[in-house]
Amino acid sequence: MEKTKVIIGILALAVAAGCSRQQVETGAEVAVPVSVMDVTLGSIEEYVAATGTVRAIREAQLVSETEGFYHLQTNPRTKRPYALGDFVKKGELIIRLENPELENNIKIESQKLNLDIAKQEYEKQKSLYEKGGVTLRELREAEKALMDAQYNYQYALLQLAKLEVKAPFDAVIVDLPYYTPGVKVNANQPMVTLMDYHQLVLEVNLPGKELGRVKTDQPVRLMSYTSSRDTLQGKVTQVSPALDPDTRSFKATILVENPEWKLRPGMFVKAEIVVERHEGVVVVPKSIVLARSRGKTVFVVDRGVARERIIETGLENPEQVEVRRGLSENERVVVKGFETLRDGSQVKIIR
Image 1 (cartoon, rainbow, N blue to C red):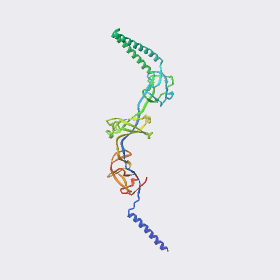
Image 2: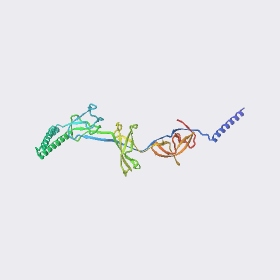
Image 3: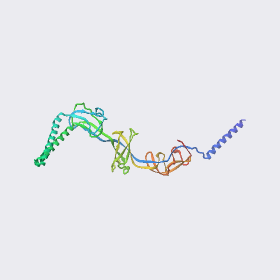
Image 4: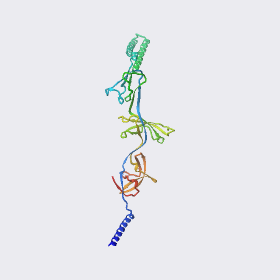
């Protein structure tokens, strides 16, 4: 009985070994799981990337033009004294200085009265001259007196304007040094700093190899490293035609549209200058393109089998590549699992 059991065991092992040998000899292969995407026509942009710090398109530091007693004005929108971050419109009075001695010396009311008298005298002399009542010399003297009165009045207004710190353009208050209300400040003291950043300026240094590709009016995308979800638009406004001999780079200036004030002056941003764009072309992820000795290839799935396809590429960027030859619309390319494939591998498509 024991001999019979041993013989049966040996026969079972032999049968199993024979089956395994038969599988090897017939070349049975396990299907490799892969993910695929359908080839479609799309668009692709080739761009030159750069980084830099944006600054306001307009900035002004206003200083006191004369001495006077300090009075910070009330913001008509907030109903409280102007403060950092407040928006101001062009011509709005932000700070007023009181200087009674200067105002008395200017004699603005007297200058205005002299101007009115000079106007009346000139009109009178002009009427008499037309009737032959005065000479041309007398008319010219009246005209000169009127001009002197106008100059004196305008000069007085300019002197009074030195007591007022007004916004020269629509802007935001970014610096407002504190002074005790009513304290006397001297001339040339910083009063307020304003910035208009509904548009921003970005100056970047680009590699010399891109000279000739980057041109004025090319579109630019900009992303802030602190708020990468927001993408703003801009354009190239200036390009230097010369390279820096030390860095072998050239300078370009970009105007950034910032309508919602999302970017702030001083932010570090990434810029993508679009140098070329193609529409209606085959575009695939750059990560699936393999570099072989015979050229660039991708894997295409046909009836459950992976076929390695040599392709010719065109425009490319860090994420995508244009395929000029080698792929057709509606074919399926492998996007995951291609690393272990070879031409003719059996594949199983997974989602």
